Length: 87
Image (tube, helix red, strand yellow):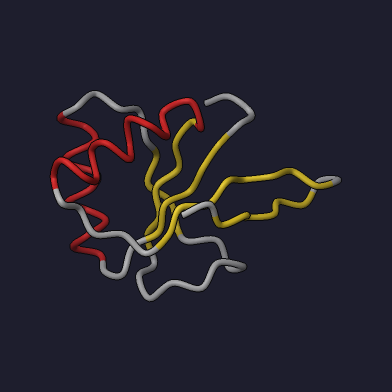
């Protein structure tokens, strides 16, 4: 994945796994990972993806009526990762 990344969080593990399946079916490259500690979420899973795929992700969410908690842009700040909520 390139330097410009985003994280999407979910309200439940079920929502995270449904999103993973839909993204894989649409050949969108994602990585499942634990939710970063600095992002509050009720589910322990998040999905990381390239920011270039954001429009495809948003279209997939709308088309498949997928549930999520938030979308964040990952910003590297002197070796520390900050998560800026964009949706």
